[in-house]
Image (cartoon, rainbow, N blue to C red; front, side, top):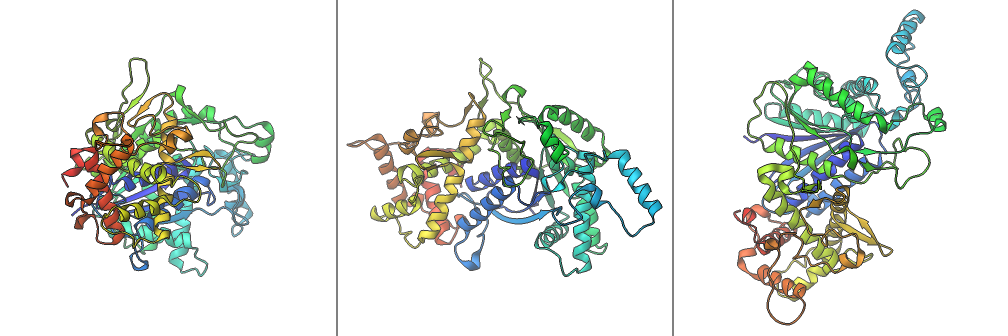
Length: 554
């Protein structure tokens, strides 16, 4: 029996790692898998959290064929092959009396003597003028000693509320209950992967306590009838160290916000966290795999470059660009979910080195992320990028007001490709919108980089699998890019017919001829609905055009 797969994404960085994971699912890296996902944060309005939740919603719209088929099905050897189920939970610090640790820990139902003892104990661990007074709704702000306590408390509090049958149980608390019950139901074969950083606040606070918090919350929810044995459930996690920086907060902001994370301390925070994980028995006994992921200090992204004024502590404005280390984290989840032997009794630490050129420039290939499966990653990401350029460039879907997928469907119908005209304009637009999130779009004549373009930007002068034109920052170049020439290695680029016209036109003609042939027709494992057949058909023709042996075996 295959293991049941779960993802937990924690904090802003964890959300961006989840974003990379979703795009790998769209590329087909998790064939025939159904994956349950929990987003976990203190900040309900966090921009990165909203962005990835909206992305998963769009992913599921793309997979949905009818209302009775919401979210579609897990399929094989196609785009959007994994089925994703999203559960959203946050620890609510927005209601009166819960905004700060001091208010949250105040207990009115005990004697004054006990309240004094409680205050003395709190002040022993938490600075009374800053740590106990900052607003918790924007996360734990690198105060992990406080964050671990409160994250455990928040999960347990929600479990108690759900179990009590409180009439005011919120949707996010019900979502946590459903996620817990799914893990409990699959406790004998569950693999749970946690996305989070170790240098900041929410993720660093939560990674050590998540297995224990889930186990203890299940005891409450099930009345002690839980089957969650931490020796059986396989937990894995990223240990993502610092890879970005931002401006120092000024005295005025510190006076107002009490505590603001200091990027200058991130490296020290990372060292302290790694030392803790290495020695803590709870971590060692709860996790099977810990993936140590870092980035060169001289290449750190600067998330304050386009900002002025105060350091953003959270909320809707915290929507940082994506970074290649988040793709490395998603690749760690791929390794964890596909690794055969997870029988080790204590946590195993792994890392992957990156190749550099003779001039100390990073050279990232598929193997940099998934080792021996590197060619598969290159081929699948490349297939989705070719589809993106086909829709966004060739059929102008990157432009405002143009539905590139509809234009493609009309062209295929005109060229006597099997009829997919039953795909509605709205469904076609959803496909175009997803490809914009993956690759790029144009707004008022300017480039708005999507996920893959942001990943490429974060590498700086390094190289990343695809040709410079395929990931260009130049609008005229992108509007004319040939979907069949995205690879740096010309061996994988599409063939073209001989005759009149540009090579791009002749490549497109050859591609459509492949679409019209029987060898490109979709198969049953690729899907049975009209949209599934459309994706399978395009997937087959693109991978055959790329001449990639790894994908055509299926």
